[in-house]
Length: 115
Image (tube, rainbow, N blue to C red; front, top):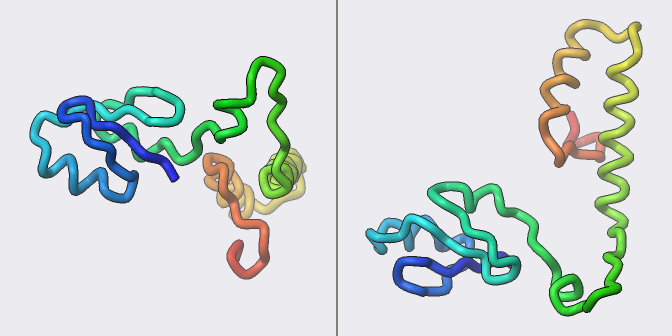
């Protein structure tokens, strides 16, 4: 779970409660992530979905992050979509939809959610 610190008042705020805090704290213009230390101005915090893990933070010099199965499968799926786009025999409607999907990094892999 991502937790931010308000740079105006110093309060620790969970990501789900940031909107409420911004409305209450009038001087809140910048939020800092407690885990990675990055500053987020305005609405930039909304894009901060994934942060460093505890293993990365406290792992030391030679730490190598493990590849999660879900991330690997997602990258394979995105790669397959890019390969399909290279084929010339795709209908223009399908090509248009795939071009729009290429902008996203969380394309559903299961048939029901994909449709």
